[in-house]
Structure formats: C-alpha cells, structure tokens
Length: 240
Image (cartoon, rainbow, N blue to C red; front, top):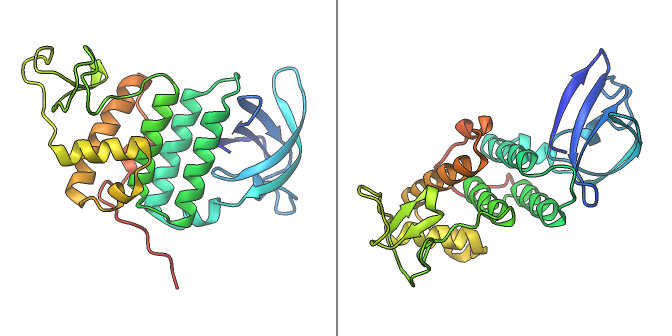
C-alpha cells in the first residue's frame, strides 16, 4: 500500500504497488466505517493479497487479506515512519502501470526490515533509495569514474554526472567525499550491512545528504516526506 485519499463520507481511493500489474488505483468502499472488514488492511505500509473488480477509470476493491502487517510497528516509531513515508513516495514516483517485480520486492523487503528494526531507519532508507534508483537506470558510481570509467578510487562527487568522477572531468569547486563516506555509500548500494551498521553517526549523516541530493535530482520533483526524516538515527531498540 502506497497511499490513500478520502472519497465521500466512507470510501477511500487507495494506490497500491503490485507484483504483476504495476501501480494500481482503486476505490475501497466503506473502509472508513468502524465496521469495515478490511479497512486496516488497506493502510500505507501494509502488504495484502487484494482482489479487484475492474472498472473503466478506477477498479473497486472486493477483498483484502493481510500478507505483511508492518503498519503498526512502523507508525509506532517516528524515524521508521518518516523513512517508510519516503520509500512509498519514491516507489509511487518510480513506478507506473508497467509491472516491476524488482521494485515491488525491494519495497516490501525494506518495509519488513523497518518493522523488525533490523538496521537504523536512515540506513534502511538510504539503501532502499540507492537500490531503487539503480533499478530505474540511475545507478550511482562510488569508486570508478562515472563519466570516463577510469578506475578509482575517486573522491570528487557530482550528482548530475552520476557519482564520483576523476579529477580530469570534475568541474571546479566539486565537493570531495572522504573514504569512509564513500565506503558507507557503496555498502548501502550493495547491501553490505556489516559495514553499514558499524558506521559512525557523522558518516551516516554525510552519506544521507548525498543520497538525498542524488535522489531528488533524478526524480526531478522533490520528495515532500524527505524533509521530515531524522538523519542521525542509530539502530532502533525493540521494547522488551
């Protein structure tokens, strides 16, 4: 479930990312009533098996069975909630009606990880953003030159050029990234969680700034939910 909008007094329009049909918008009748049988299953961050009645402009939800109940755990933690909000907004912008199983599985895995508190919320978010952009064709380079392919390591980072670049092509005044930040960025892209979890808060903050800038540049439109993300979170501690 990506997002919902109120419709009339008791209905909602829901936007879902599906395995086989890409992004789908449908009407969920009566889900805002207390007695609704599946209203809670059609909230953002939930994963459900949903059946539709196909309509001309909007489908209608006829049944919903919960597969992954992640909403309660995510919304109970502010850092996880804001991270998840950015994830679903990004998925909404990156996907259309064409199916993308990879994007679907990536989002579900990231939401599940947030709900379980497996890693720091911002680490999970930044890893998701880098991977989602890579799947969409905008894979960043954090070692070899993104322009010439010259073997790295390189430290000059240019969002518009796709990552780190050699000194020969780096524009004047290009910011430089330290090795630990580049190491963390590469770890988040490849899923090296041992390296990511061991990183320092200051390194995570620098890496998050790079990921945010890279994401918003390639999406061309700003992510409204990104401004609410807390950028210095450590691993969430589950209550005893």
